[in-house]
Length: 228
Image (tube, rainbow, N blue to C red; front, side, top):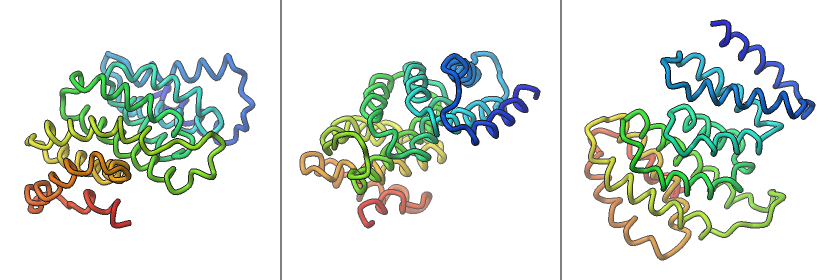
């Protein structure tokens, strides 16, 4: 409980920070928080949540430092690394764009390691929120300080992930995992449909998805990206 309280205090302090942390202290906070999120022993979820929230707050001024630490830990599946990456993508959509390609490539390489339902839900959360960030970028690219990135730089990494989760995870029995996959499909399609090449496999699956889940799951998640 003491560690959780310390994180809560630290998060409030960081909300007032304007890039004034010493590099050594910054690195120590990032390393400590990432270690708490990836402890193999039975660490309390409350501690992992507190560490995750602290990193998201820290990223306001030190985004690249936090993101690089998380990508380093991404090679082995950890639920709270996925959760934190998703929260970073939601909170700082445009800042995360230079890292999206790296994140998606690592996620492609680790598909065989993501085996249990909770991990797959968290994995889909990253796909959903990174894809939403990319769609935000498509509409606001002129606001970014870095050179414009083309659609192909995103959809070539999204397509294999889209194909894998629709082919392998939608047939599972866990309703929460199905919902997580379907929530990710809408923003993923928003990226893929910018190019003609992958459209056929996407359109082929839409009607099947709607038929399979119309009785169980709100399929609004699948279609709303293109409607908007």
